[in-house]
Amino acid sequence: MDFKKISDWITSTQFYKAIFRHGYEDTPRNRAMTTFSNVMYHLHPVKTRKESIKLRYTWCMGGTSLLLFIMLAFTGVLLMFYYVPDARRAYNDIKDIMAVVSFGSTFRNIHRLAAHLMVFTVWVHMTRVFLTGAYKSPREFNWIIGVVLLMLTLVLSWTGYLLPWDQLALWAITVGTKMAAAAPFFGVEGPFGAQLGMRPDTDVKFMLLGGTEVGQNALLRFYVLHCVVLPVMVVLFLAIHFWRVRKDGFSGPL
Amino acid sequence: MAEKSYEVFPKNPKKTYGLMELVKGSSPIVNKEPEDTIFTWPNLFYVEFIVTLFIIAGLLFLSLYVGAPLEEEASGDTTPNPMKAPWYFLGLQELLVFFDPWIAGVALPVLIVIGLMLIPFLDINQKGKGYYTFSERKFAVSAYSFGMALWLVLIIIGVWFRGLDWNWYWPWDDAHIHKAVASGLKDMPVLFSRILGISEFAGKGLADLIVMIYFGLGLIIPVYLFKEFYKKLGLFRYVTTMVLFWVMVGIPIKVGLRLMFSIKYVVMTPWFKI
Image 1 (spheres, rainbow over the protein chains, first blue to last red):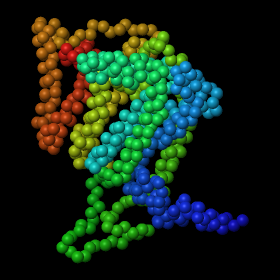
Image 2: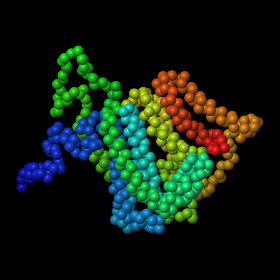
Image 3: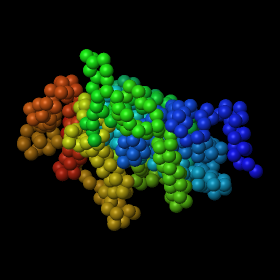
């Protein structure tokens, strides 16, 4: 069998050429085209400064956060196949995932670990960006998008906390939403809340929980936020974030 | 490394010729200064690919040993003690000991978010763009590190040092035995009126005055000590920066007041207390 002939034939077919727009040979042109003619051009320029690739500069924390987000989406979708946000069965679904579903506990463990880790990596990424002054002009707006993404990460983690419907979940969310009730103006127990006509069944805590305490409505709301609304928002803001990194230009000798 | 200039051949409009340079390379560079870029493929993609592999492998490995916890089914009948939020919110929950819920849970987080978003517009120091430096931006790096350290310490306390009734528990304390709840918290105005023998109204005035002096001096002293800093920022930026900064510094101060003098509130108004 002539291997060269077969590979030549494959690379000469219309189908192959339709997918790969650049040659295989290791030439400068092909190296440029690999980035330039692929979707990766959304994320990276054709050439990058040597300094900005070094791990000791970037710590690779932004990319790691993205990777963790992708892994969370992947494992999250798998978990969604076995989980129903019904207060009567949610807890048992989690038990099934851990005990009955093949690799269920592995994926649940990864989902939880990645979630905690992502909060951490986003935070470290922000610290790195601060320490290298990468938020300075012309990248001010991207820093703001970054802060929004940090908030979204925290809220995503927090909404996911309720879904197992165990004691940990119920009371952690109870603590969190109690604070919402204490919000100035919008919470019934906060300053100026009662004066502005907030009642236990009209304030911001009620809106979050769909009730006065954590119950079925809260579970459904958190589930929809966690699985649909917030991830979609993260993806939108990520798109802006990455676009801006590419287009704002580098703020320093990168 | 930072102040490297690549303008090796400055353009001279009076001359009709320019200097060229011959360098070894495999692709032409036109209209660009000598640079130190390399192809993203394969250099950067390989780094990303390897990091990806390490993280996926690490997570898979960790997931074998660190199981996601699942406690008893949710029930409103039994309230766990202590009730803890997820670790990344424990900094805020820890502040609940020292501040009213609307401050710890709402006002401070909002201030933190707004403060973070304002950073690029308050820090107009053009040095330190794209490289690590402390000497060229001492205030910025110190203030940020202070905030992060404060945040981290509060989280560590919340995770490892708080037990029953949110009391302080050392790792060697028995976590199942209740501790006596600290009592006898006093408000600063009341404390003043008792110690100085003045009316409570005067005590309130004194407490308010001290807070005003704290922010007032915090705003005025740096103007004289760091004239350049003030001039560069301008009044508006300077005041915003300093107010945010002193609010941040005020948090551990209030914590200290509570721990040392059992003070509950410093500022008291009919609508809210701080």
